[in-house]
Image (tube, rainbow, N blue to C red; front, side, top):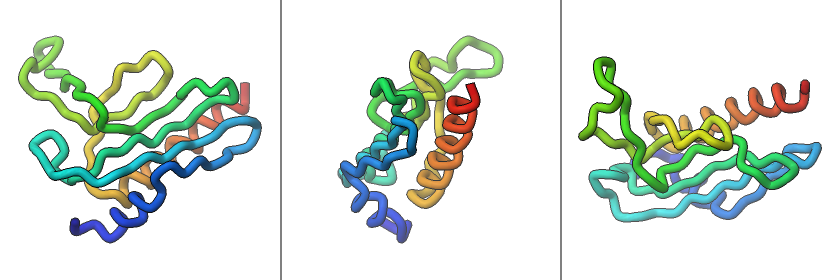
Length: 121
C-alpha cells in the first residue's frame, strides 16, 4: 500500500469520537485483498451519528452503487463501491477514493459542515 496514512486509517478501526452535544463519529477500517471492486485493499465505514444514534453521514464501500449517466437514468453496467451517504435515506452516491489521507480529510470536512448545519437548527 503506497499511501502512508493507510496504516493510520487501519489503526483507527473501531474508534468512536465524541463530537459534542450527543453527536459522534465511528471509524471502521480493515485490510482486504485488493479486487476489482476494492482496488485499494481497504474496507471502510466512516459514519457520523445524531444523538439518537441514527447515521446522518457516511462514507463506505460496503455495497455497490450505480453511477448515473448523463443520457439515461443509470449507465447500467458501471458500479462503484466507494460512496457516501449524505443523509439518512440516501442509498449512496459515488465517492472517488484517491487515498486514505484524502478520505479522512473529505469525511471530516463534511462532518464539520453537517454538524454546523444540524446545530444551527
